[in-house]
Length: 187
Image (cartoon, rainbow, N blue to C red; front, side):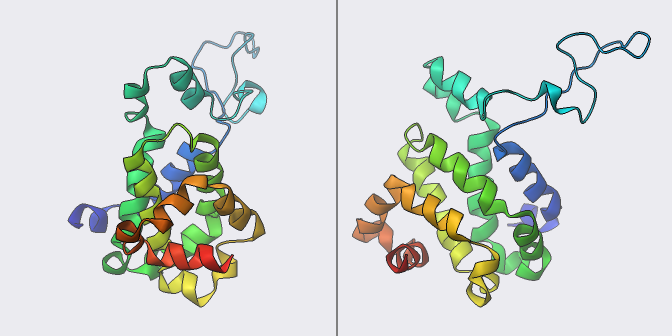
């Protein structure tokens, strides 16, 4: 908790968003001769070098059939950050971070990522996702104005997350994710 309190929370949100964004712009370091960029290389900010396929790095690890590597990817580690951020939200002070989360639409980036890989995520990661979303749904900022955080698209994605139903129906775990269970029931 102390580490989170001293952390630049805005930077943490930026890192999570960049981590889960479906397409990353490739940036190569190389010599540029006479102002020309060599084939396959891009200048900073040039979208020409963006991965053609969303979530390419995650997909490469999954296709390599080395599932042990999956848990070490930043995309998966960031799910733990997401959960812990909302678990400690009260101590951190919502006023410090929720405007950034709303403005940058964190859930609009996170939920499509989760939907894309729900079949490859292990039980512990899925539970972490459920706790994180549940804690998010229990924040004062969300409860005061949910439409500023979750729109129809995010609601549809939540309905597509097949694993949530299983955890909501688990009476033991349901107690941990009551806000998520209630939200899903109201959809």
